[in-house]
Length: 216
Image 1 (cartoon, rainbow, N blue to C red):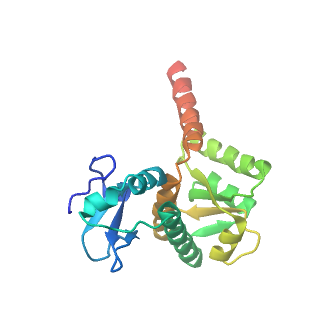
Image 2 (image 1 turned 60 degrees about the vertical axis):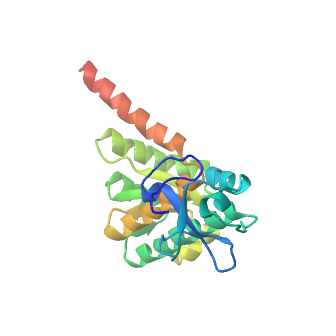
Image 3 (image 1 turned 60 degrees about the horizontal axis):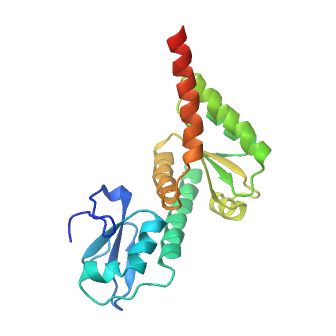
């Protein structure tokens, strides 16, 4: 099965929009996050909803034309793999100097346009998030990049990955190492349903600026 067609939607898509699965030696369905495991593979749209639907409707057996065993929590297994991949790359980016920590440094990186993305711990206070969101809106208003923010990891996981303590806010900088983090964070965020509210907020700022220019 060489074409990248989702076995649920029957639609073709780019590799980054899909997750590959193979069958292991024990006939169990195995997620192939890096897309490098040997053997025949099948593809599913890269979000939890479609993967759980594929499992519930026995679509893996149909795709592989064989009796296969689907792990009971395949959706959770994929989530854990994507999360581990993102956190691992985040740690490497920190060692490469492509991550800054702390609300003040994050806000500074955002206002300077150096930040590629922002990470808030799931425990982050509304006040702390709001101040950084104001900086992100100001950056867009001044013609800078739309810097997205994500709440994907608890403080303990961020702290462990970044070698710090009580890591609540972090900014990934626009460097090569940062781009590798972005790819994995976006994949995890998409898998969990995305951040439509965040996108809408930044789009609204851009629209307001366009409208103001039209009135001049």
